[in-house]
Image 1 (cartoon, rainbow, N blue to C red):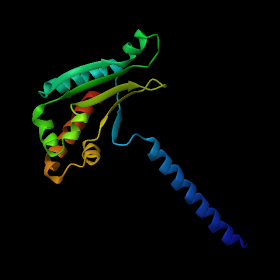
Image 2 (cartoon, helix red, strand yellow):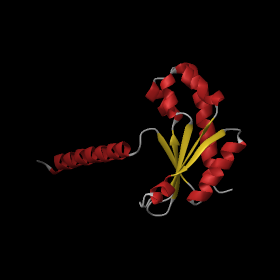
Image 3 (tube, rainbow, N blue to C red):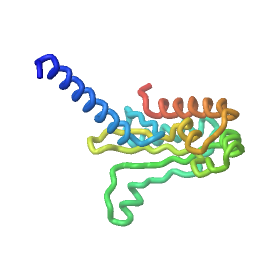
Length: 161
């Protein structure tokens, strides 16, 4: 084998390894989950999110403190809170298209702290939910508005003023 052929083979092997590694990273990421880092701690991030949700006229159905639940049964869990919120005007058109999306409604956002102390906010990507449930193009405008609203809520809760 010539030196040039060996270089080409090494380059192909490197490219293959890079593809496999990148594919693995994508596979490890939760499908359809949008996650952004917060500039605040978990409690303040969730408080900010809840205030933003209410300010936009959405209903907060529940705020679930998973860490408190874990502590009640003698288990430890870093700060992890779920906010369940929404409104019928936004969700009903989606359920009219395909009722199974009701399993993913109302909307949910999770604020959590990782092992290094960073705080994150995660929520389901409306586009991914639409694909999951096979929604038609008749709800594209609703999905676009929903995606923009979720992004704005998340950014308001996580970004510095």
